[in-house]
Length: 370
Picture 1 (tube, rainbow, N blue to C red):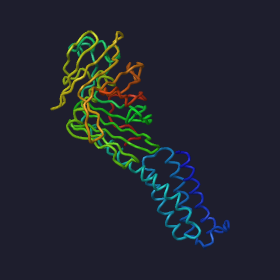
Picture 2: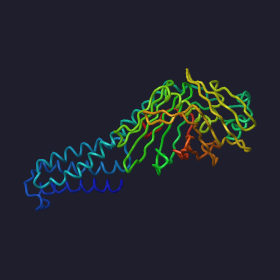
Picture 3: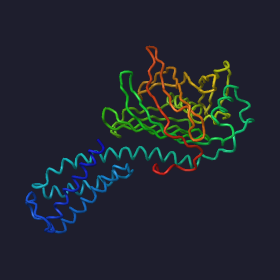
Picture 4: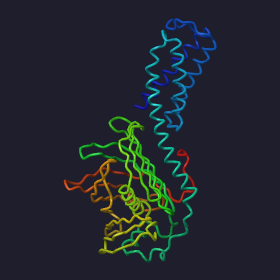
């Protein structure tokens, strides 16, 4: 679909060249019956160039492509109105390009909110120590957690103050939903715990974006169809609690070295199961961590998270079974996982995710996102 759209843009742009060629007598297009002055011919040429550039930078996912698309459409439509008899059919591709540009603008605005939050944390929430994690740092942890940190190669490496993770996968809104393919970018910080999670997807054949923001014990969750239409707008105490669980989950699965955090209290249940109690300000959540004989974390189960559509908040046990441990940026981590709500009428696996990349202890937001 993207390639088809780019072809439409390029062809539409090249058609504007006809007005330039006729204005300068390079060719006589009988379809253009109205006279075209040389200054107006130059405008036709500029419009061609704008559309060609827009097509290229749209294809390369440039963040500001939408702006050039809107400018090109405005100029083009002014020309079309002036030469309506000959050029009226150019209105249809202009409408298509304008709609796509507006959708892209919606994505730009949401992504800008995401990057603004991340940049603020890099400036004000990123001074945690990153000295080497040693055996004495993990001595207070339950034995199963100690062995997990050794297994993941966390001991002997730097402590973690932040990370950036990228995922691909499938998310579902119901058990009948086949799912939509998603890509995500996430930043977490641990001095003052925060989590920023941006997801792009295609839903019902239409672009959609989702944004999780968690900062200062406050969480919001938005889903926008066509990058503008609110499908979910969740917030409040239950959302705050639920995202605190998600933050703890990230610590366990993506950044095991952070499990030395003083805000976590531990209870040993048996040799392979421990319970973690995480306190962030006034919010306290818990989860059970399950390990296998290889010291791999294989599941995380919490009763403190909510399934929500922004209106209803339903408390079901939430689990994230993980598997397929691989070396990822120096750590042995699970590369695949599922997210499941265990409902009275059966389990609902609403997501299946896979790591694309993980980076730790960054000093600034990565290029392409600022």
